[in-house]
Image (cartoon, rainbow, N blue to C red):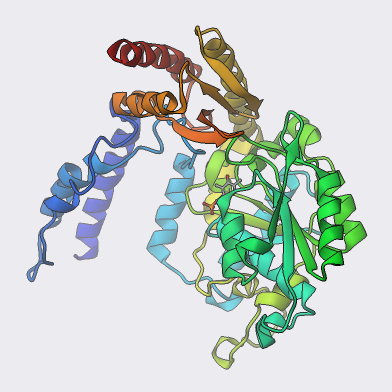
Length: 468
Ligand SMILES: *Cc1c(COP(=O)(O)O)cnc(C)c1O
């Protein structure tokens, strides 16, 4: 392909992209395919001879698109959102075009410097005090793994990387039973082990970690000769939006000299609203590490996860490695690959720059406030449906409910709704029961989209209960 042809196809694809977004409401949200259906349409062997872009794109439309679930659909209410505001998509097109490896300052000085400023802008937007620095990672899972490795190294006098862990005692990490599975996996791969991730029970309307139980667990571990290494708190758990009381956890961490990490992958976006911050994020500035995904609710195209660090040195002491071929000379610069596990890095800061400038913080705040408001309205509307139960009240824009009947009936309703295609929801578990989760957060969703869900849920529920 020459660059003139590239320009023609590029403009055709950008037209296609705009049409796709404008007509998304006409498509079923979740792919309506069965396993193997797409693979069966692909040739078993790669082509020996070149094919025309016309043919490739036609197959993309015919074979691939029917097998896609539409995360940018305004009636996507499943999981958490993965928004891609149009200016952030444009920035990604530019980043894809330049295709630079931004691992060191000198391999693209602008990427490093824009990243430094964007982390600072976001820190200000979230009300973090001056002095916090940070780095943009691919995902919250990677940021949490970096923090867990840092807990491990700090607790072993920074000897784990050198000596391995066979000579140390049992390192212990504490969190509530509402955390995301990425915390379990970070403990697996950091060599800490699932058995040493201590999950503490929760209490209260926001399902916050019971800090009295946390203290007892730490004391018992010390008595048993174990080595407490860190505490992971959560703002906005995946199941029902659990939010820990940050100050209470920090007080324990301080007493016990433990490193602290806060997972706010989803809910962090809402903290750009001062009134929400006041309600949920008192004392947040005491955390050593905080992760928040601008690629979820805020609107930056996936992937884009920001890890804030009160002091980057413990993490640098854990992850920094400098072989001869990566050494740079000259002025003091930041090399962000020293802050993370992968060496290669994309220029992720550009889409944050485009996003924040295109909407302003006020434009982004008004979306989040609307989503929270509409989620409450829908929750109240579902409460009125006969036999329906609100299991957990809205925390930010997430609540959960049950239809009349057994756990199997909940799953039957979720499956029937997703086959209907007008909305997309997923199930969860709470207190040993199956629940249906509902979150509002898609960038283009409207109040009408959200309120339509009540009608769809009622209609589909009536249909399946008549059928049984
Ligand atoms: C989404 C989510 C994660 C995982 O995020 P990735 O960026 O996909 O790794 C972790 N914690 C919470 C609370 C989340 O919502």
